Image 1 (cartoon, rainbow, N blue to C red):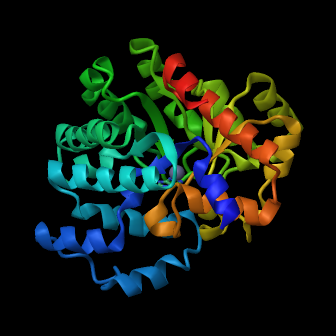
Image 2: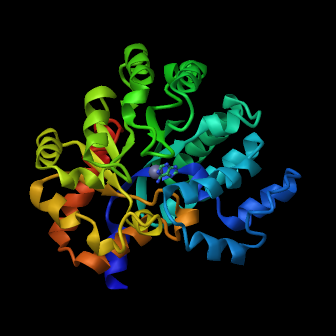
Length: 334
Ligand code: ADE
Ligand code: ZN
């Protein structure tokens, strides 16, 4: 308990959480009813059944199959607003001061929900969370890598005015990693980088894929950080590069266990990253599916690695430095 309090008090930043992955079963069923949506018969029928099924994902794809069905209950601007607001409240309660949150517009566009509906709800929640909790927040739009790059480019163009106005702050790449490597999206990233050079670029890489996915995300997509990236450990060269350039990895411990990337948190290269000076943050990924928000992930790391207070201070400092917020905000957070 004492260490949980210590971890709660730390000035934490979250850089890897999918808002659609914060959809708790209770809210999911409520929205299904509110929006008259019939879930497929393969989907769990009760909160209890969700808990049981979510506890046995075979791999990333097995999870994603539920994740995309789950989010199909999100329809109105208010749905997106309430979803994000619940996350911001929980993050605030966990002692998270700054959140950079992902969303997957293509999965909503495909169902006939407009970009403006999604982003307006999320953006309204960002502002309300700042007013209510004093937290800072940024939206990062992700491209679904299982869809063609042409769809990704269309989506970037559809969001052009939102990038222009600074409503969306970054670009990410998620979904099924191994069959859809970073190089497929070179044009999407270069297009956005040319048009809006201030935008933050990141990509999921080295979660199920090996270290070459990390190298290609850096070399070809020009990302300035890497989501997951735990397989960077396979290459001394990549490790050295991440350390030299202080490129932050957004590590998601409970996610890696639930998706069977590792058997237990203790197998993650947390100590190696610390020793080699590879900066990383600790994040929840899809907390409604993986059974824990940011503080639970911090606690899990502490249980496995028994880090010192000095190591924890280094971790949160790296998280602040790796954030895409203003210099002034970073000073406030430090
Ligand atoms: N979408 C939501 N969570 C994800 C993850 N951990 N990896 C890839 N795509 C995702
Ligand atoms: Zn993720």
